[in-house]
Length: 315
Image 1 (spheres, rainbow, N blue to C red):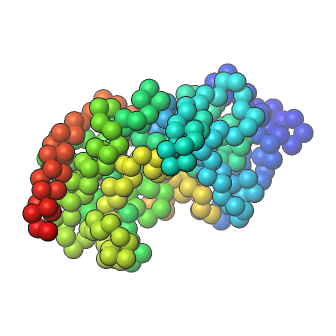
Image 2 (cartoon, one colour):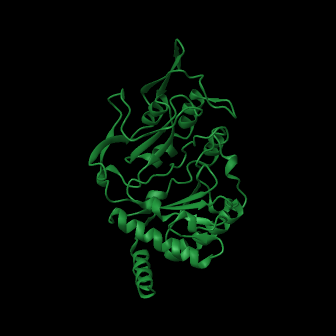
Image 3 (cartoon, one colour):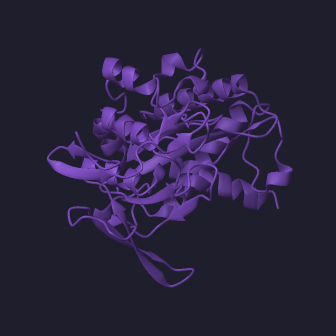
């Protein structure tokens, strides 16, 4: 690492990334700087690259720090080195295309930090076939009056349903108050199919834990103390923070992979850019096996068809 005036140059696997304003404080509550953020991503390099590899990725940038305006960046910021790759995606609503960041190396992540990126929000599909997801995402989203104990209970029910389906779920904290569970799927279905499957799963979890779970479409119809199993996160162009993504909050919490047997005792606030590097050094990437556990959605699509018929019959 060498310094050029106030800038810092990082050697990232043979690529040089220049970090300007390295001492700018991004996270005031813990005093973490832009350079601290870059070094955090270096410390979890294998994990963050696995989470983002080959996926269109929206960036949540904070050019003036967390106290300034957040920029949701779909198009790759200008000035990218020639080794930073992109993937083109189409947005039918606006009939426009965007070339989004497509991470293939850790240096891509660190360069994005140089461009004031804090959060990484990848699609659940890859550039080989952007229209066919290879990841089903279960978002356990607590409503405003819901405590984390209830999120834990719902996670246990979700785990039971996944086990019965023969699906391997890979849990992580959201970096906020919720939990996410990812399931690798074969890229054989389009977004609407994956969303239907996710809806059917959410309905089954709701049937088993009706006092804890809501799947109501309209927010005003949801119990404010329940967990919303948000199947909509599987819709096209819906993204959530990746595993190992820092969140744009003063505490610098991290969306962190966890083991199922940790959920009963964990506090999501414990996972920050100060604590996760040591955890990663000790445990490695807890999502390392995700690509080897591919689930077929057919049972869930059968559940969806059953539930749709029941809804039609009740009208």
